[in-house]
Length: 319
Image 1 (cartoon, helix red, strand yellow):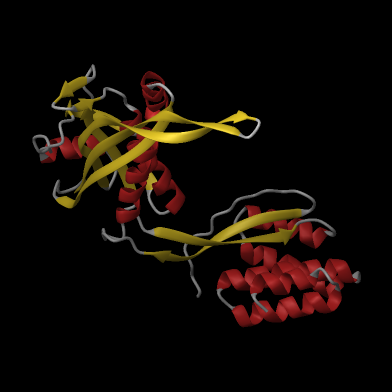
Image 2 (image 1 turned 30 degrees about the vertical axis):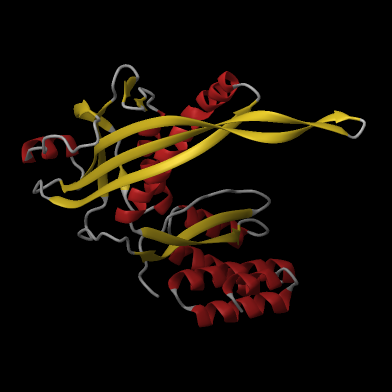
């Protein structure tokens, strides 16, 4: 596989080595966008109710953990997939989250919010309600001396009904590229000898449960629209002789051709077998990066013939 995407580097110099990574392919997402669309602007249109509201056995909390979790989960997943560049999040055109899509954005609003991004991803729908139910369960309590008694435990169950709605727009045309709604019902429990204590435990865990729920759904939407770039991570040798050192400097400048020339000079002049193995190792990684796996394996074999450290080279390139 030649002419891969531009090389990206992660330089972690330690013990005479340098870690590098380079792209090896891309997995497509469920939703496809034009190939040249690489920059996302994230917009939050949701404004939470200022106080908790009770309505027909359900409470609508004013906690922001679920909302923030959805936004941060989306951002984290996009970052992990290493395909899109994500701009700083914006909060504009907000309305109270009531489980419905608000008035549609106009093309002018979309283009204004997107700025220089290709794609505008908008969290437009949001709702969160919960209810608590209690039941009694009989447990055995150890009193010591092999004596037990039956005790009534209060088990509190908090059911959260969570709703998110996303829309993705073309920043240039303002047209909707994708729309997805999530309806999630989730519960967790807490128990105590007293009902008030069970409720306190439910309340204590509530922010975390909301945050985790929002984060999971935000990440799920990111995985729906974002392809994934895959990378191979390798280590090259950077010290031991002047050719290794000069080649490493060239790699940091993304001049792999110059690095190859240095390493080729090195194998013609170096006499110490361990250092030769390091030079062959670097040439093997370069060949693998270029897509020439046959040559990479040949260099790995030469590295192993020089010194036992070459066995690691063979393992790396799949000898």
